[in-house]
Amino acid sequence: TSWGAKRILVACPGEVSNLIIGQFGVETYSDLLSLPPHDYQVAMLSLPLHLDRAGVAAGIEFPYLKATVDFEFPELDAAKIADPGKLNIGFTFSGNPKHRNDKYRSVTPGQFKSMMDTSIANWWQLQASPLPDEFSGFAKKIETPSILAVASAVSKMDVIVTVDTFLAHIAGAMDVPVNVMLPANADWRWELSGSSTRWYPLMRLFRQKKIQEWEPVFAGILESLREVHKSM
Image 1 (spheres, rainbow, N blue to C red):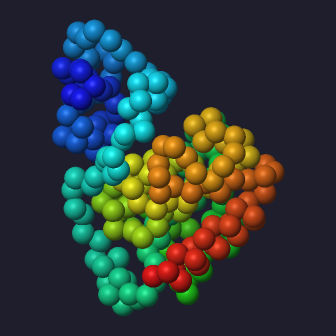
Image 2 (tube, one colour):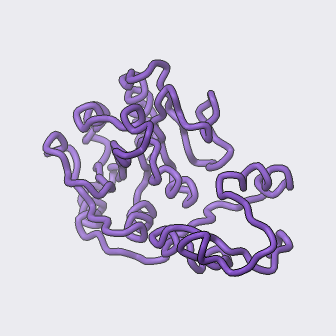
C-alpha cells in the first residue's frame, strides 16, 4: 500500500467485513484469533492518532466507503418522482439499547417527531426496529436487512439525521451530508466543542448544552434542513 505495508489484515465482525471487503485492499478476518502471523498490531480506535502523526489523515480522499450492492427501494424511487422538490432524509432515533450511554444518546419517537417537517422532506427510517406508531403520516420505513442494504439506502438519500450510532459513521465515510445529534456527555471521538469534525467533511454536529435537553438540538437541525431545502 501507499503506507509501505505489504499486507493489511483487519479483524472485524462479519457484517462489517461484508461492507469493506474489496474496497481498501485489506484482508478481513472474523476475530483477532483468526489472524495469520503478522509483524505489527494496532487497535482500530488508535489508528487516527498514528495516521495523524504520519500526516496521512489530512490526505484521505472522500468518499472512502461506497455501497457495493445496489438494493432496490421502490417506495423511495416513487417518492422521488412524486415529490421532486422535497428532500429525502434517512434517519435513526435510537441506537443499541445495550450501549452504556444509550439512555443519553437515544431519543424517543415523540421527541424526534418534533423536527419532522413533511412539507420539505420525505422521512425514511433506516434502523431495523419497526416503524413506531408516532411516525404514522410523518415517515416510512425502508427495509434494511443488512449493513450492505443500509449503505445502499444511505447512498440514495439527500441528508442523514441520526443519533450517535453506526449510521453516522457510514454516512460520513460515504460523504453523504449527515446531521448528528450529540448528548452533552458525547463520546470522546467528537471532542468537546464545535459543529464540525476532522473525521468527516460533510458531517455537522448538533450538541446538547444540558443532559436530556434535546429541543435546541432539534430546532437547530430543522433550521439547517430548511436552509438545505431552500437551496435545492
